[in-house]
Length: 123
Length: 247
Image 1 (cartoon, chains in turn green, purple):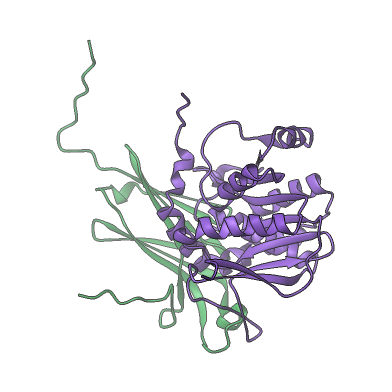
Image 2: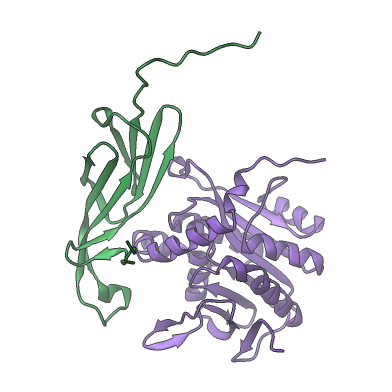
């Protein structure tokens, strides 16, 4: 199936896709999102299934195309939105968040394996 | 055979000027800083870069088409500004041409502004600016101005090539590199770099409006940042995190 290129904005949903990063380390998956023009209490984080996270944040004010100097399109954006694939199993129930200087951090602890790994020391 | 990269001059170019470079790189620090300086000093476009190595892109301003890579000037300062990511295959020829052109216009010093990506940038309140230089004398100048020089490691991308090509041609060059996000627009890092630029050159630039307008810049710069990140990944920019081996 051919992938259809789509812009980073969606007029139907009035949203702009936020810039996001995913980092995996030994204990957690850290997802960050750049969310200018957003207050912390307007951010919603929703797990989707077992391997996807949706971040949606309402902006302090709507922003129209004309503010970008674009007059050949009409519409206003009110939200940031991104859906991020979580590459390893995580425990969404223990999700923690922090919002600093317009950057959202979502800390997702990794699920432990059924059998605990055993560490061996070199003699 | 026509040159692969040309600088097309539209107005007279001052000689013995300072030349500033602000191309899209990590955090768009150089682009944001240089754009702010150009705006504050009300510099005019004096030339632009034309090349088939660059994608067929124009930037529209007030309905008129412009090259995405332009050069602005006033009586003592020339500034190259890239409004779109430079594709990795074009970076070397374009940077080489900009340096050669600056040399032909007898610039007295080249300064490139950029970022050093740091993983924990959101935890940094006071952004630090480091410097790199093309000669030992300029390294000494950096230290005298309170700018810590980068002693070791890797530089990757347009600013790295400016340093290398300037060193090869004995053109004085300095890079001012502020701690920044890798792939989020970083106006605060740009402001920190501008403050050091002002200290180094004596050209006073007010950064208050840049900081106040930070959220707007972060919003407007999103798509340029996204495209720039794609090119940075292609040129393996993350090698700047690597620990170097010295033999």
